[in-house]
Image 1 (tube, rainbow, N blue to C red):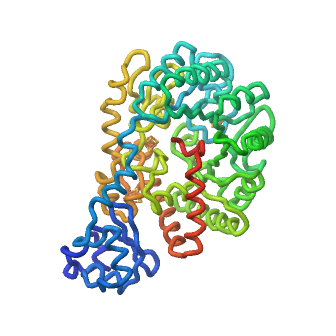
Image 2: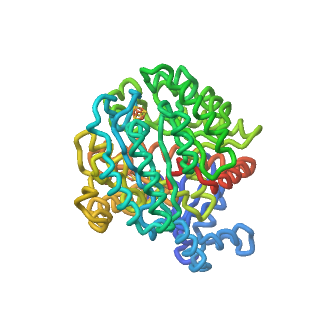
Image 3: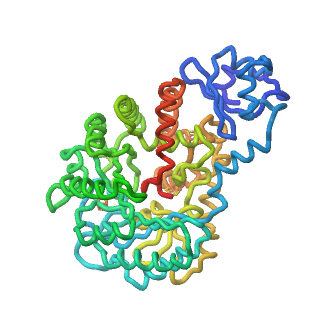
Length: 491
Ligand code: SF4
Ligand code: SF4
Ligand code: SF4
């Protein structure tokens, strides 16, 4: 028990026979109580003390709810709780489903925060060759996962269009025999899109994901493009693709990278997404990788500054919901974990994380990495997260690589001292690549981790909002929508 916990909880009062294992956090005047089955309950001080001491009225509705949710030790329905836990962790039994393919490192943009540190358009040394692409697709289909997502990343993938086209056609052909659930995502700035490329991608049911950092002035400040306004090009194609894919299972999504320039612009950003007809907005914080690390003094911020922005933007998103459903994606990921027995399959927020067991990244030269962020570190000369080469190392050697085992141990929250005691453990995740880049150790130290502080701040805000039935109804709608597939869900 921590000192803070001891201040509100008297160990002498604890009834170890009736009261099941729980963690708690004080939010305002209420106690948030959670357990490893992912259940939660708010209690005021008096009820909390009775719960701890095993003195709740056994005939009360609250006692019934706590018993059903696995908080009462002598009324534990283990079969039901284990079924829920198993459903939440179904990803552990599947094998890698997300396969990130970097078809080139070249790009026509020079975004201030580019994590991948893109190469200039000159030269083709960093374009994937067709022989390598074929080996990559063959490897992808060795995965035991019944669902496969191939995600094109770069650089700008459309720069190496012949290989994008080859991979789409070859993967579709292979899948006629393999009969997996095959999804293909293109992550692109869209400025090299044209009608012929779009027709091919549309006919092959490719999902699109692009970056939109807000209104034109903000977007173009972050996303530098020598060919004119990046915003104008991106929005033009976003609108066209959005209209064409309106009632399709594949579609276009946009996401935002928050820089220092975004911090005062939460309304403008949300309004821009609403204006374009987006179903929501994904407010991603900067990662200390690639160019972002080099220019952190100019575009970076503290966790507190990000959280101040996030809370304002989130509250504004709730305002928008008075007129139409519109979600925030970080919140939707966490809320799906909090309010259902389903994992939203977002590989960066789960325990253990998705590196190697849910995701594999293939570099332009055939190098294989535990995840795309691990591959980005290799651009900074650090090969810590490399698993091998697609032509030299077999599937078993790759998925059974010691690096994957180390990342799994490091991202399993039971192994993190702070996380194992945190009320948010059932819903949270740590990123070993982020810990390594920020603190020099994949195990990380949560008390000084920026990402931990951001997750804790977001979860504090969400639970405070969740303690209000009006908001809960809004959140249920977001989660229902989430059962639809989205490309940035990264399945
Ligand atoms: S962030 Fe994407 S679009 Fe921007 S420079 Fe990097 S690869 Fe290009
Ligand atoms: S190491 Fe980090 S970026 Fe890579 S899959 Fe895990 S959480 Fe995601
Ligand atoms: S990362 Fe931070 S917020 Fe998340 S479970 Fe660990 S200690 Fe809690």
